Length: 354
View (cartoon, helix red, strand yellow):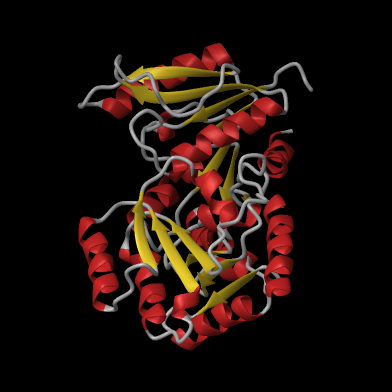
């Protein structure tokens, strides 16, 4: 390890939100610390905001005082001051439009694109207009879809594809499966229509072997969509077969007890929950929308047209009829999930920092 092994991660909303980006920053900081790096996170927060997830003692957090007005200008003053003090080997950015374009031009930056241009075109136009403000910036795309859509916006900046990681020590197989004689399916996701849980419910309504299936949906979110799912379950008389379980804090313990993970979603930049399921040795059923075809292989998963009930039935029939196939897919899922370990992912970041 070289003398200067400090990494700065700028994550403005670490204290204020619990989205995938904030979880990503916490996990990435831990992975760098595991490799012996000195990690400092810059975040916004009020005096009362002290909790921001499971940050361990190896990671230092510098907090920009939060103010409703002129927050970005205030943040830049602190960023520039702290960067002079910390003198990091590299600074990792998750945004460019929260004051980051006023950072020192000549420092080394890694800029992570968490969403495709088709979802936030206005912000990508901002990136296009300001990416040249940095003399030493390397762009990281979290999926091929993000990478392809970002090409017209990043100018001459180099770009590398690095998938997000998952904690394969936390998400791991368990010998304790649900014992009810059924094929147990789980979805864990925000309750949004684009996640597509209603397609699974509608398919189960007409499925001839539905009494051999139990489908549990964990999560919360859009109240209108939650009511819609609840009404679907009642109208299709699926009580006892499909259940909305609400949000839980121990999803890493629940996932490996199920036989199949389902998330037929659309519009994901990179869906983390299927990767977590794979790490638990649970086969996955997802849609054939990007980014799933990039990494879902037939030996551990199914990427299907979510509106095709027959495709869903074929998947369920396979797993119901062949327990050895289910076991083989479970083993293959774990093996594939290990490729997304944070140890593997952070090594790719380190290669760019050297």
